[in-house]
Picture 1 (tube, one colour):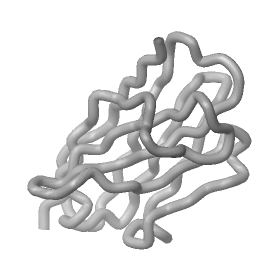
Picture 2 (cartoon, rainbow, N blue to C red; picture 1 turned 45 degrees about the horizontal axis):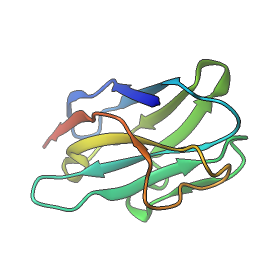
Picture 3 (cartoon, rainbow, N blue to C red; picture 1 turned 180 degrees about the vertical axis):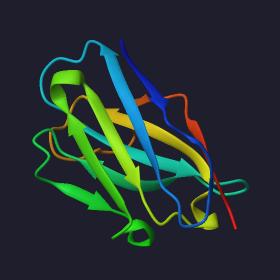
Picture 4 (cartoon, one colour; picture 1 turned 135 degrees about the vertical axis):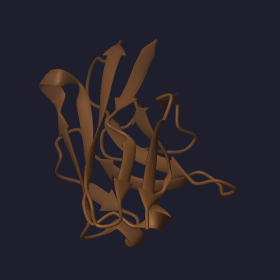
Length: 123
């Protein structure tokens, strides 16, 4: 009963930037954690970043630290992923996620996923 829709993906050259957005709709009541995952060709889906309801607890996978920034606007039920200094290894389908049962972290299994948005970084 919660829908997540990602946008903002595309093709960019190495060193460039993209900003992904994920808008939640439906039963978005209360406080909940959101985050981003990605899946590269031939690889398993991996964690990228999570953010607590308040925005005060943020976690990134090591490979994106210093380059990506996760943020959220609860008034818009939207989470963002600002991606700077993109590298070819960032190429993947990026998925938005929400955990309606937890305020600070996404706790597996993820209960809500977006449809994914393709990010392709050329060298």
